[in-house]
Amino acid sequence: MAYWLPVVCLYIINRYFMFSASKMATETNGKNHKDKCGRCGACLSFCPVYKVLSVERYSPRGKNFLIRSSKVKKHQGLIRETITACLQCGACSSLCGSRADVSALIRTERENDPYFRSIPRQFFGAFEKMGPNVARGVIQITSKALPLIKDMGKRIKPAKKSFLPNLAHYRRKFPGTAFTFLNKDLKRPRIFFFTGCVQNFIYPETASKIAALFGWELTISKDQFCCGLPAYSQGALSEARAFAKRNLHVMQEKRYDIIITGCASCAYMIKRWPQLFPKTSPSFPKALETSKKVMELSEFLHDFGPKSLRQQSGKRQIILQIPCHQRYGLQTEKALMDLGRRYWGIEDSSAILECCGLGGTFSILNKDISKKIFESNITSKIESISSNRPAVILTTCSGCLLRLKHGVEDIKAMDVTACHLVDLLVAEGTA
Figure 1 (cartoon, helix red, strand yellow):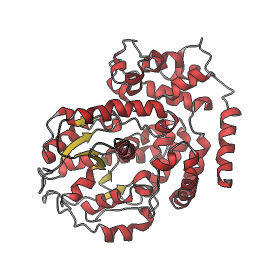
Figure 2 (tube, one colour):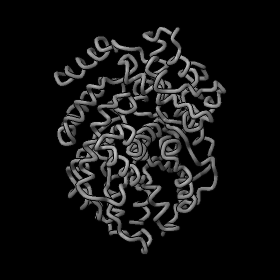
Figure 3 (spheres, helix red, strand yellow):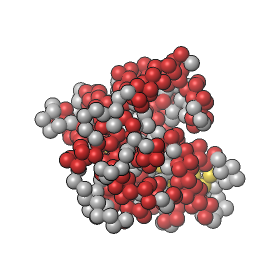
Figure 4 (cartoon, helix red, strand yellow):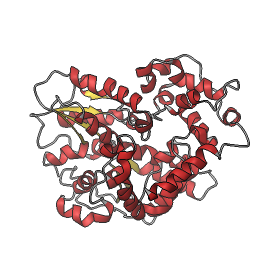
């Protein structure tokens, strides 16, 4: 238990001794974020949390009111519970006619006041300074104590061999052939493969299959690290900036035409790297250039992949789960749906699932709400699909995959599995 002592100390310091002593977050928000909310309530139809709770204070406009109201005493358990119950999915801001950005308001609140953070920012800072190699060892050691924290132990199980330090091992396991299933007229671009944390530490075989699709003819740097999304969502912007700087340094060693990632959430965050830097910063043009080159795998396949597969999945019913960061952040939902029609003949909208309720640490700290979202958006829709065939849920987000795999395991009576898009492609012999 000795290795938990630093984390506990950081939490106590963050929680009780580091409140903002200068200005209330409301003042900062009032100056930096114009209140565009028209109180129309359109966001209520899109917010995953409100849809399952139907309580006004949990709606985006309810959170907006609580954050901006000078009459609300914010350091109360009920207010903290309300504001922290945000997936940071971006549904409200992406679909708001007034362009009100409640997600940004919440991040600002978390940045200015530790009371609204679920995880101390010092944790992210320590994780970034460790680097990928040291972090791998710490994760493996810490995972042994995870059963002590609710049910995280059965949810998060690091692989015996992570991806980046064991490239030779996984290349032997999934050798692949360069561009065998891509259009032959596609010139071979210089590609950097960004794996992300989940594929590196938990699902390394998924990352291996993506590399195999390209015949391993892409650059995979062992020095790449977390995209910074967990820190960004918690308002730890300086720590998120440090993650971005580390990766930009690795990516800028050579000039790449495309940056491929198999995680929609990682692609979403890389697209937002420029927001972390002032325009006068030397890192800003690098972040801007990088943000324009990143492509999530399904988007790449939609633009450059074959018009059909060699094999069709006639024995299994294919169901698409569209991650929130792909739907609202990247706004490439149409590309994924077109890919589903092109490759597996998915025409029925009932075979398309929405938010899984993960939201990073949200599913751990808001377990009951996360479960309700999963049941509403995933379980109920799967049960309504009448088919005698086994069902396979495809997703393009590593975090969603983690949630889906364990959520599907809880549905013991159903013949349903969950996998990443590339898992089915490799299984069908396209690589």
